[in-house]
Length: 401
Image (cartoon, rainbow, N blue to C red; front, top):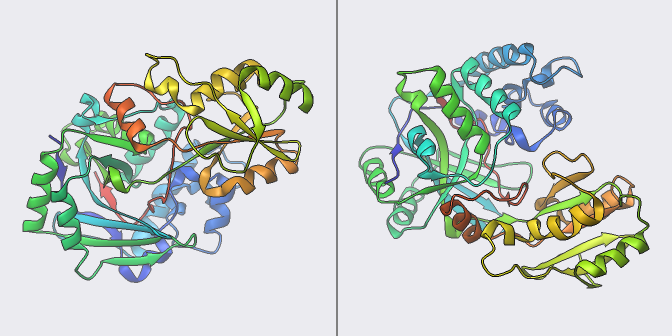
């Protein structure tokens, strides 16, 4: 079963929601966060990336940053203002990006289930990022970022969402990126019905937010006996509504090879032909090099290969990036960078043309079925395998612990 708990959300007055809502803290750099919040005094980035209100060059893990986050949070509670719902509730959250739509449920989920593995993960986490968000939670006594979950779709949960969306929304705002965020508050019998429907699910899967979930578990250890600290706030979407975009790769140099020599070596590793900016299907990668797109056909995985090892991003790493370009661990190698698919192949062309990269690889997106299969088997996906879009907004539903 999957436990779902209504909670009393701390949230902005509806008139201030558009001013408060911000991109997730971990999809922007400090410089990008500072630019986004420069003329938005109510932006939640002042809470989640509070180093933007300190002198440039301040270490984002300095104690001053967490002190500033507390001050900014307290100020925002008064200035927005933020209000605390009078009774525990669940929140229907709809995302619309162009023709794509997905409808999920925001509530609290059990840290115990995360630690037991019935809320399944597919990524490793970094100690420094865990340390940061754990301290952020403990200093603010609040979980300020939503974990992004998915579950196998069920007619019962879909039906409750349709019913909720027929009412007047609590929030309905369109962010600067054109994504529409609509939220409905649900209480009473509908809450009970939804809790029961989630209780019939075999598992939940973390799509995005592994560090938030891990940090919530660590914060619980520091706050024994506090019921709210034993839960973490998340939004769970049906798997058949999820949209995964590719996570593309750029490499700064060719490891001492000329473009011609690299192409010659590449032809020994895979099929190389003419290409376009986007690969047509699984097993295909398109590469931007020396002002041209090339098509690569990756070799098929051998029978019995673990599902994670058969993903295109891992085959590319093992057959091309590692042996030909000397990219070691992609988690730590400074010569490789990753570009979310939302930026499009035009960003890959721009990076190469500007000289910031020598070669770029445009990937075909991983499927949600791949993710769930790997998680079901207890596997770990290669780093930077999935880019989920659209993103949730921080600041609209905060969980106090």
